[in-house]
Amino acid sequence: MTRAIDRLGGGMPGWAAVLIVYAASRIVSTALLLGMFLLATNEGWTFASHRDNPTFFTFSGSWDSSFYRGIALQGYPTELPVDSRGNVLPNPWAFLPVFPWVTRGLMAISGLDFYVAGVIVSTVFGAAAAIVLYRLLLLRTNERSALWAVILFCFGPVSFILQTAYAESLFLFLIFASLLALVARRYLVMIPAGVLAAFTRPGALALALVLAIHLIVRMRTGLLRRGEAATIVLAGLVIAAAGLAWPVIADQVTGHPNAYLQTELSWWVGFVGRQHFAPLTPWFLMAGRYLGIAGLLLVVAVVGGYAWWLSRRALRGLGHEFVAWGASYGLYLFAVFLPQQSLFRMLMPLAPLLGDPAFSRSAAVRRTLLVVGIVLQGAAVVLLWFLGYP
Image (tube, rainbow, N blue to C red):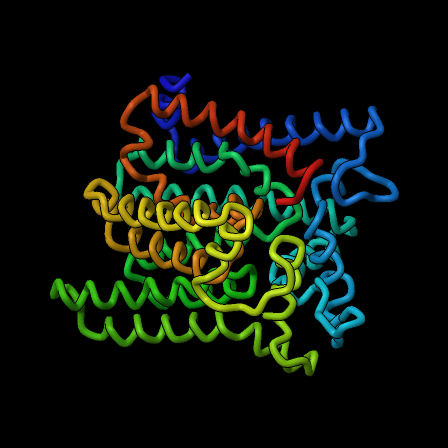
């Protein structure tokens, strides 16, 4: 199997090989999703995000997709929903507008239902993200490593999210495009991609930190060209402003102070109760709540292990941009995100790190990672559709 995949790129353009890989991965994900949908429907099982008239497309548009649908059809509320104590309840302000607006555009042109249009938008941008990821990795590694990184990305444990009515595919495309522009030293191109990413899903703010690290590295190594510093700073400031804008917009539209933060914290209630937010504490809060001292030590071990991985010489060989992105986005997740089942899809923007030679050096390793990814994807479909949400 791995030999056949290694021969895939021979004699054809890289983008064509990537599209073949992506199409094969969508067949696998569709088979897993459709199989579970048909089984659950035939057996009368209750699955997540119940619909009055469930179809495969509404099944593929469960959970948060209903919020995206509401935004696409009705926009954002001007008043936040609250409980009897005045605590903010989950609402659309937790979700950014680019994906539902793009989907609404396709709906207007085609007349399709939101869930069908959302699946199409997600699937198309998933293919675009895979192609851009391949091109990004080719700048710093060989064809085999780049293609295998894309394979592991497309067949990963939560890769079904690339075809569900979520913003993930669009966000990944924009992030990878931003990083491609960074590595190619086309800093001004980063601005539109980074700004759009900032209004697609949280996390694009890490790009501004990457640019700051990149500027320092270029200055220290004496590689900074004339006028380059100004464009790097400009791109960083614009992307940072975009990344910080949504909470301000939410406050202004709703008239509610900290509207966005309170909305995000409303999703924490089911895991850790009502909390006040403090940066760099969510992982300790979650681990300590369920595992006590052992959980706190586990968090320290995970952070230390990740820092060690980023510091490895083999990974540094991909370039400081890749390491800076891994560190910056990892810091974002650690600083603000409450780790739960959504964590696994939140890790997908770290896909450029799959270019680590350790993942593609051995045929046995490649084969094992591919099989494990497919098996875990099947397990994730069962667990998330019937026990939780992605």
